[in-house]
Length: 157
Image (cartoon, rainbow, N blue to C red; front, top):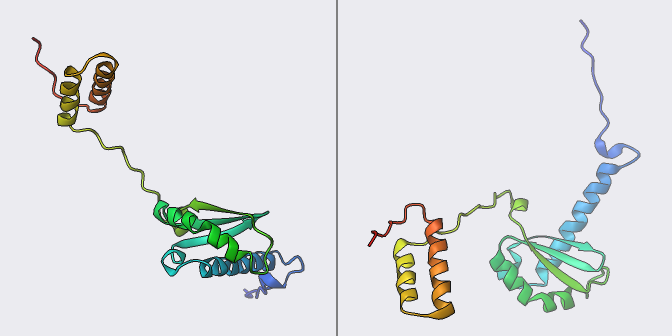
């Protein structure tokens, strides 16, 4: 049996050059990321994952809410500096938080359950008040009790 030799064209050598276009866009985005990082302090720039220009907006992706807050603080400075480069005019910086781009799975955290001592303290506080505040504190304690599955039942008087 004769072995057939298959010759494949390199992906970049096709006439439509789709892959070449994609690679050019990737390189353009890398360049934009480098420019964006150069406009910011080193402490923040290392936490920027990516940046993209959409119409007149610069969208900057950061790894957490902490870095998003710090970046928003530097937003006007970033806008002023980035517009000095040979890019389309940018009039707004949008900050987005993402962990998916880094491959991390977002941690799904359950809310903390209140301690039974806290619920009891709220109930005691409600007993020392009157009117609307008392009603609100009692409703709050009942809601919290319903969230805590093994809350000790009060003895019947």
